[in-house]
Length: 468
Image 1 (tube, rainbow, N blue to C red):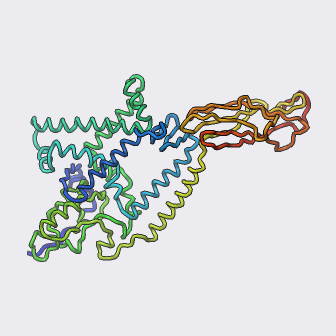
Image 2: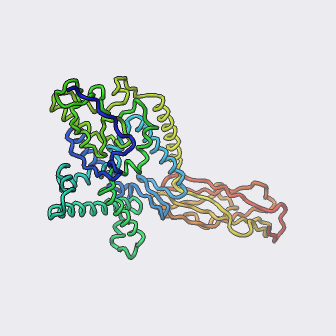
Image 3: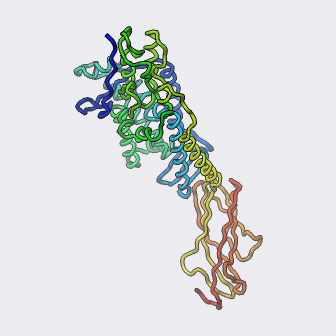
């Protein structure tokens, strides 16, 4: 009997839901192949990166630290404070354009290979589940079986490890915001000393446990907006994982007359971590993990047919057309990204390692006494260097008698600031509109300096002993 064309998918429901709208818990089978063999290496490197960043040290400080309560940040040896918050715009814009370009060229390769959700779920939690409960068929039987001693100890051991891992990952996440030393200090001093921090730690641990135990692929399908943006970011030439319908259809069992190369084994569905059938075409739920490629290639080898029925390709390539790597959409994305990169590079290169500002003291802006106009000002210096700095203060014009500085040197620790008064005295006969005196602040650590123009205010016509 000739093979029949497979029915189209039901586009009104998600792969994680059954016919009644209930959650369908996905138990993906194991895949074997080149991509599956590469995954542990990629996951291992990324886990080392994600976990190691808050513990790594650059110049005696954390490689990455976002101290929100203190309004401080450390990024690979560079220090920033609240005055540098505008740089966040350039960082987020750069990340956004990077993802846009990557999506236009390579589809959801980030989701399937590098996203922390995928890395920890597929690289850690599912491997523990397989190790304790066995392959997918055995896990399904165990889930449906009545409670017994075997089910109790296997489920209990799995969830105990899940809880321990969730707590550990939560500590790593918190370390990005309070540093690894801060996490160690919290544990040493106990919840009584830091109740708010421990509430956050418990809440984060619970969220992570729930996510990696039950929520899983729903985070990618329901919550994460990145998958829904693919329709706007991709086109016919974007690299995706697709099924060659020309070669595979109509499906049929092996040696069925008129059938294509697809033998309808459903192995691609069994290994999919989101439970979709890739043969239905590009879908929201597909995260580009490539397990279906390995599963299909393995079957093709067994039945003596060429690999690549499911493969990395573009929709144009799967239709027999030539894929174009560079195209107007990509050029526009890259151009915007390069423009943003240039602006961000300029802003970071011109980022000052210290801040110096001048304000006026409260009260009268000037005093006229003994033939002199006196201005009292307040200078504010902030050290944003990653190390202590002994700032030097001097008049721009050497020996300028009109500027009186109470201290010529100022030692500030990282992120420390200090305010100190300076006094400017000018003879009344020398007062002119727009008169200024320059104060130079020198940072020997970064070998940079900044000149503050101190504007001198005075009366239009001064009288001895007068005040404004």
